[in-house]
Length: 361
Image 1 (cartoon, rainbow, N blue to C red):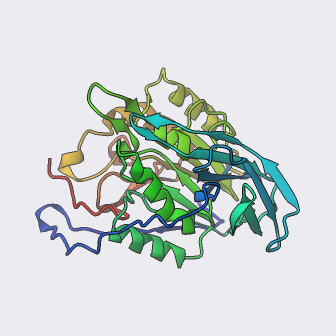
Image 2: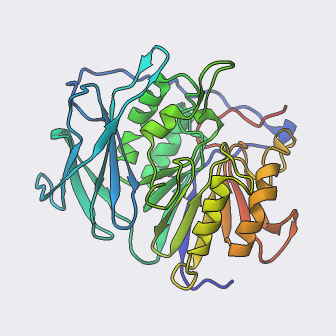
Image 3: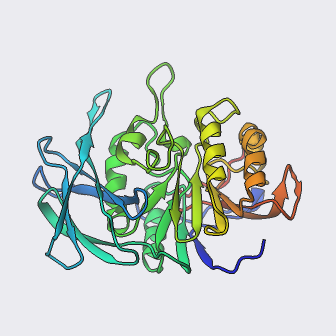
């Protein structure tokens, strides 16, 4: 399909060698997270995400459980012409208790416009820029971030780029079941995540997985609410959004995906609604790649591929982004394991920060 429009994708990664050729670099300095004294109602871990057409979701956390969930905003510094009320939640995981997690949707907003905002009437002023309504549009894509010196390097490089939306194909904080890591990750990414929408999907390191004990995505779903309701999904683990002429589908590698599942039914319906005349680009993102050459990861995505690849092919998906395998790879157009000029290009984006090297078993 010839494209007359332009979409720019910045894949920010740490490229490693293949197999036995990989030589681990010297470690970077350990990141320290000193907790400076702040008022209990001070907004922390601020990040934003798209919330349907011309709306943005502002998320932040306060220690004070009585702090209000409203956002003041406007197009001039220190001048807030609008106010929006939101909702809040919190969760417990064994001995850990989260702060009050606020989610407030603001809008309608103008395209390609800088907005200034303040959370809950306290703390500093933040600002963000809404995406454009037409091409060109630029996405930054990086996953498997973690919380290392390499993570900080990736974030610093992204900050220097002129991009509109950040897309993360899973493995955010590498918290697993260690809840405090969600708090340090939120503080680490706030300078970036409070200025451009972060659109994320879950990876294996978002899953709280302790044998015999609690198992799920409690922290991920509580902290990183995505526009699943706005896109007709019944789960925060899969959803879609649209920017300019690009429709992006975020799928869940760690929730049911067979042909009888809710995710499958939702995906089929979502793809059927895309008008390719108005929306020429169709992009799909998930964590576990369907095609990769690393022998330790072979077969991990086979079941999902068998179920969902025909849907993507029939819809004419242009490109698929995945993470999980810590090396960059890009395929030709492929379908059902064979070269096919009508199939999508598959890109495994590598390792955006939690630099572990390639898996060997």
